Image 1 (tube, rainbow, N blue to C red):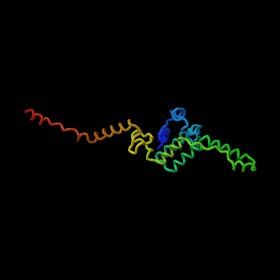
Image 2 (spheres, rainbow, N blue to C red):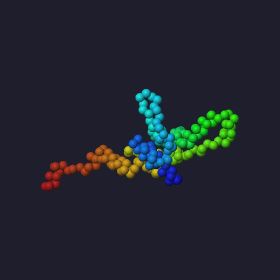
Image 3 (tube, one colour):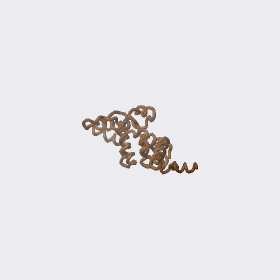
Image 4 (tube, helix red, strand yellow):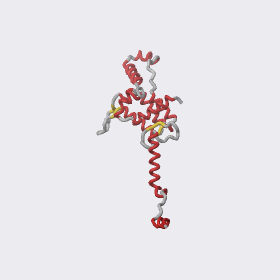
Length: 199
């Protein structure tokens, strides 16, 4: 498997864990050109009363998190890939061309349809990563310790980092000690038996 696909899948996990405060840094420094520019284009206005509008990237992030929890079901993956295509600049250009065609006289439309000058849609690393996890859903996991989304490199991985793995082992030992510690401690000799030994 290409290393770049695994790198993309790790970046997808970073996007799934992204907090609002780090969005600009992710967009401009960490993962430039990872997702379509349309992800950062604006906000979707909430229709229900009292609800707040959300940035588009957060709505797409929630869809990604839902897919992660469903182990990248085919339907979730198709939605993610198609919506990313719609938010890409290529899709916006196609919409512009469609709008131009609608304004053309009927006699000119057949020549445009026969030789469409539509741009080829760009495939984003985000979409590659979604496809990888659709084909290998065992890689998409949620850390058993901190709850972060992460991409498993090996099937036995249960935690997103060495720190979480060490903490989980320590917690397990502490829990076991709390439950069974009394049985594991060597019993102290009673005062009577110590006196008898001293004689």
